[in-house]
Image (cartoon, rainbow, N blue to C red):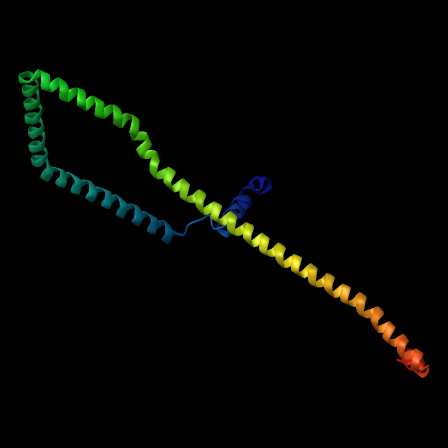
Length: 185
């Protein structure tokens, strides 16, 4: 590549051709399409921003009323606390106790769904392991049965062979001509 660059005019032309061949260049139509897309995206962002401002303007009166309600509620709570200090202290202690319990139980309640899911996955894995071990046991049983059948066949062959010889020998003792027939067959 360095040699192509060193060849100046021919090197640049070769680099352009390689870039075109590798799909690293854009046509004028592609550049125009990307520019149009960028313009459309800019218009969309501007329109969405204007819509958010308009929605915000329509919600502001309602938010102001909610804010005023909070101010009234806070001043009423403050006035109640001044008028009923013992009850306020008891309510405050109850709120602190509830907050303490939630502080302790909150993480457990958050972790509970994950623990339940983990238990389900562990159970599924154990079921899969049980199924796998049963499949292995079945395969071992089939292999043992096949071995038994093969052993029985071998034993039968070992027993049939001498029996056939005995029958053959007995037949030959009775008639010596049978020995010749047995030898020829």
